[in-house]
Image 1 (tube, rainbow, N blue to C red):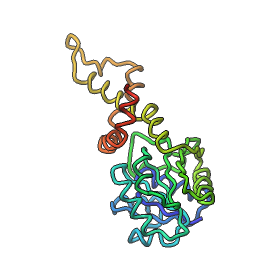
Image 2 (image 1 turned 180 degrees about the vertical axis):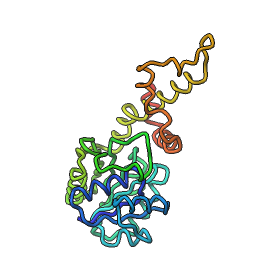
Image 3 (image 1 turned 90 degrees about the horizontal axis):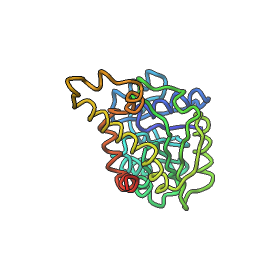
Image 4 (image 1 turned 45 degrees about the vertical axis):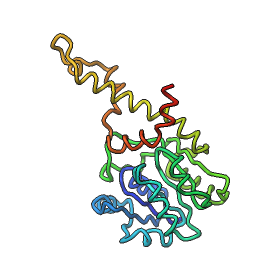
Length: 240
């Protein structure tokens, strides 16, 4: 298999490292952020390409790992440049918008690895990031079975557990299990950090409970704002 990684942040670079570990010899990479691409290449995660078209030229599978706000447009560009035999998937935290952008193109299968870290960037990438993690896949009616098998095989080779789910069901599920917990953690931390109780700083006096509940607070706010906005309907339903 020849893999193309579009977006070489934490997830993309980790996928490249995991693919190398799994014996996938050809892992091409491209990123508009040239610094991120250089770091990913230095880590051995990808072979850097000069353009998106070059990255995709001989790929069997392309993994798009860019922020949610940019994801639909980048997936459309990848589908425009990818050869007919190349199957395209992604690693975005929401699925409805990107699946809509891909339309009825049978080459696209949405994906979302349920993993991550408080840190970000290719410098923090790890080949073990996906070990034992659920990796949702969102095939549609137009999806060709052979293409689904290709992405399923790739995900399993990276150490994750592929699980098929409807795109809208995915977004409702992660609203409850991921997005809402992140929002609550940030609200709780901001509240505790902005008050004093008879002169005492709640954060300085906090025990394990607050630390456990707010561990994920503050994780890359730019990305999380986009996720909340993109999945606001499901989040609203989760909040009743």
